[in-house]
Amino acid sequence: IVTWQHREKFKTTFRRRVINLTNFLSDRVIADSDPVAERYRREFGLDQEFVKTVPIAGIKPGQFPLRQHRPKQKIMVGSIGRLVPSKNFAELEEIAENLSECDINFRIAGDGPERSNLEKIIKRKGLKNIEFVGEIQDIPRFLSEVDIYIQPSQSEGLCMTVIEAMAAGLPIV
View 1 (tube, rainbow, N blue to C red):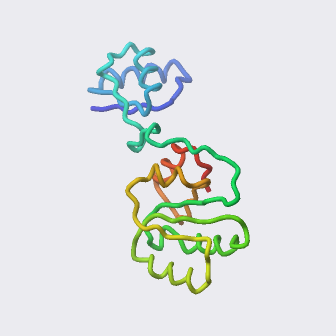
View 2 (cartoon, rainbow, N blue to C red):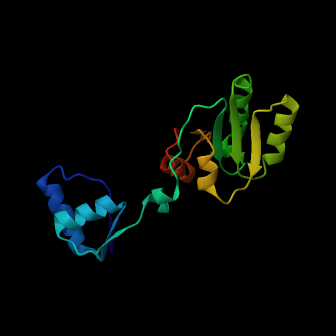
View 3 (cartoon, one colour):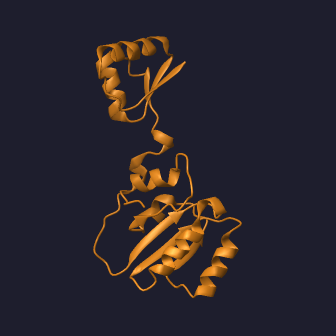
């Protein structure tokens, strides 16, 4: 039995007792960050090996260099995802078209069945401020080269690329 703990503060004595009981009944406690793991060890007197850190969604913020924002002429907006209808990249093309007179460029990483259609629309409209770079292997590097991250999906669960963009310190739309 594994118990997962996050930044939860113990608002009542009852809640603290219940959490302590779940710790007692568990084989292991998993914390979502090192500070949370340390707090649990300290507050509940738990053994170092009993509390393990597993970052949310498996992302370690240290692997994403924080984006150093500097004034520049053109703003680069980036997005990552499978090129399928539910990811709504057609909407992103419309945004790029509306901002084509501004110093804003869009770079989309990913591949999928919609790519050909999306590229045809870009060509037909003559858009020069949007680029598809295909599938990428180095997400931290891609994110270090954009100023703003945008996720145009119609719906998402726990969107990994948004969490990665947060880890890189990007503003997210």
